[in-house]
View 1: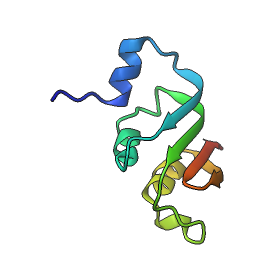
View 2 (view 1 turned 180 degrees about the horizontal axis):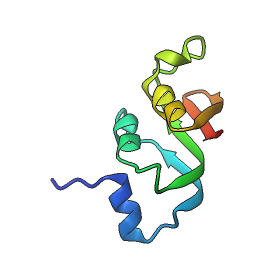
View 3 (view 1 turned 90 degrees about the vertical axis):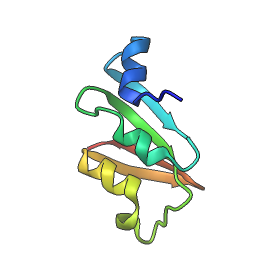
Length: 88
């Protein structure tokens, strides 16, 4: 099986570098998909990630939270198992 990074998929599809919504739900591989996106090139205004392990009492222990906050995104909310991140 040949895999592609999210950056490669966006490049091949001609996606703009700035877009409104990125929704990721890939059954427990969400963090790996995020790692494969070049956030210095692509700048979604809202990133929604499904993460069943998120604990709102200790977000700093969550891999998705840690990664996106180091990339300049802030957790703006969550509903059930979907986390909502926006820049700044």
